[in-house]
Picture 1 (tube, rainbow, N blue to C red):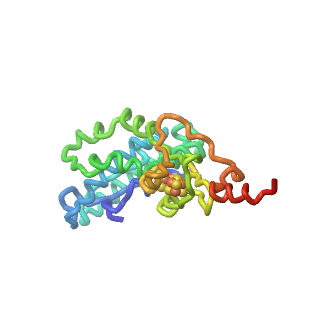
Picture 2: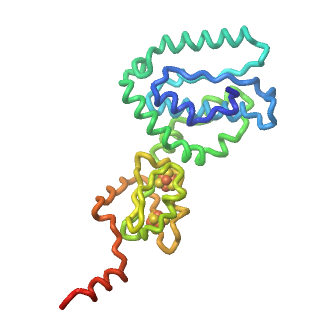
Picture 3: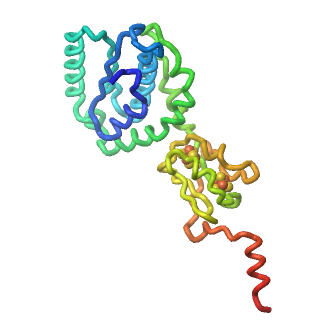
Length: 243
Ligand code: SF4
Ligand code: SF4
């Protein structure tokens, strides 16, 4: 696949699925056939992915980007063989790191769920052009990645404010909001990709969606407590009661 089309989510998903190594081949810089020069973006994405993998405890050498021209078949064979040898030396995913494979997969999967938020937070850096290889190592720092991951926001629907208008559930791209007519809506934190769309979608007169950073998300309401009894209906019910 053209390196310019490789996405951060694809790379992390491969590791979350237990792949031992990912190799991305691209055209040489400034030789891209498209004026988008996607290989610069691919480079930034790989540098970011390497730091995210290291944050998850995965050896970043399991991911490699190499650029070459279409006529360099020998070079391609050489770098692929070298990469395969490297991955063999590292051993199966997790084994070389001293962490169980399942633990590695779950850590990477948790980071993969943050990809929309990470891409938004690092939009400018991802779009920049690195011309000097000496800039690669310091382009994303371990501290920066730690802050990015630790300060990732969560979204929560305040049950006291939700009016079950369904606007958030309709627009959630991850299908992470459980809703329904007259039911307080609830966000499934495992499925949420932290895009923030629900915060924008909730009408200001309700203001039921909260962005939470640095503190735990309150537990979701139990099913039976989610039913919203409208005040007008409550009053009508009271009026029809004998006595
Ligand atoms: S932030 Fe909101 S809209 Fe985005 S995935 Fe999470 S619940 Fe859905
Ligand atoms: S948009 Fe706001 S009020 Fe409407 S269902 Fe979602 S959280 Fe509730």
